[in-house]
Length: 318
Image 1 (cartoon, one colour):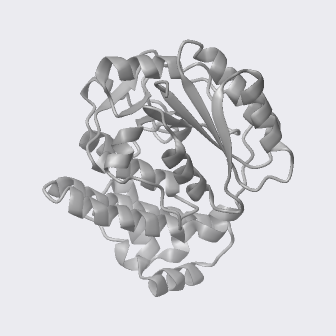
Image 2 (cartoon, rainbow, N blue to C red):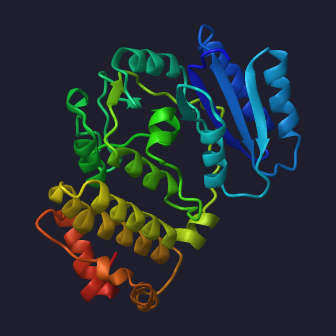
């Protein structure tokens, strides 16, 4: 078998034009690399499978289409990981695709032997959505613990569809998506990746979206399964205490910043859906999530304020 540099995992449902477009663009971007395309079809009702297979066959590319039936997105992504043969893997969603970054990622991987690669542009830095672009991310001093800390405080953001991972690292550490989680599964996966201390590298790329692949937001799953994000983060927290038992600072930060911020995020979703403060409080208490709303010195001032309002003055909470 030829050495495969990269496995591109594409979960898809009724995206025939976008999937073939993704295959075509990535193949053109990496003409000198051995790339395989793994399309995970989630019970499409159109002829997506035929379009994807045709694109692979007509251009003499390596790849396959796996039909996962009516399974979850997380199950599809796990299937892609275990079916892949590439040294590295990346995930591309038909609704979110970036231009010409994978060649730079592979070059960075080759130079650094990294196991986790994401983009930080020297032109603009990498910022969070909340800080208005004022936080310059230090790409030169990246390790798993500091990256987790920045993620917990929302000081850095990167799109899951623009990361690259060493496949052997995932398999060696048994890292996979939580298959019972439909909301928050990406966030949990990234934290689990970082918990096992990967070698991290930042590629100097300014990511630009393909504007013709317009994302379609479906809030149905978010509304129905918003509590699943809390459950996923609690699983991550358990893994953190086992895997990083010696890092008390990180454990404390997760307990008093990350977990309460996730609960507050769920409260915000429920309020937007029109649930009353009383109904939300009752639900949190019944599920045991209200006990996660606690603070310490590491809790950010803004989160402390929200927690106090949510617990003691819920009718004033905005």
